[in-house]
View 1 (cartoon, rainbow, N blue to C red):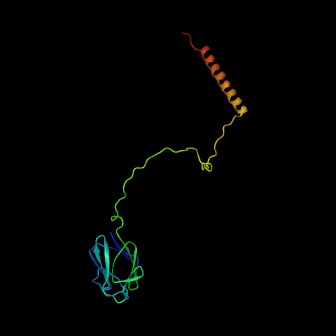
View 2 (spheres, rainbow, N blue to C red):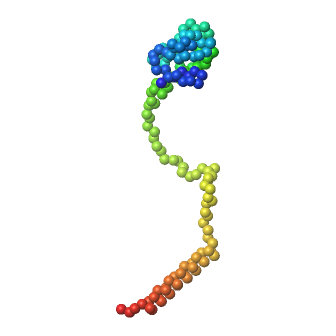
View 3 (cartoon, helix red, strand yellow):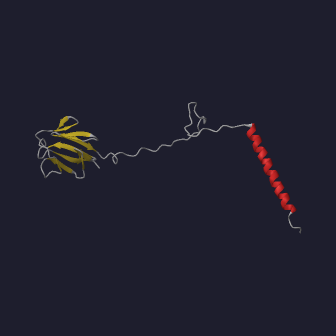
Length: 163
């Protein structure tokens, strides 16, 4: 929906004809002595508005140039007397969607990490450790556990009732 933003206030332009001025009978009232009682009007023209100055005392300017009548475009800067305004057209509904095009997927040429790639993990990478002392202790504990388990089974077999 087109909008006119005047001094931080947004006016949605919903009517075909919108009058702007200092007088209370205008669609948009601007309380500024530099604005005439019936300063200008906006007339719907297709999907945008045509701005027409109604013979105001201090004139109407669009993008810094004095105008009597002009078609408004997106983000036009308008000055009614000394009051600044900005026109925003309905940009969302006035543009067609882009044409669909088929995108062909292809496998990566190289899947290795780039040369300048760095790991951002807070944990350091664990390196393969071949510590013979640690391996020997681990094997020794496994043998002790097997011997203990075997002796427990033997004790249980000696005290088991005969069938």
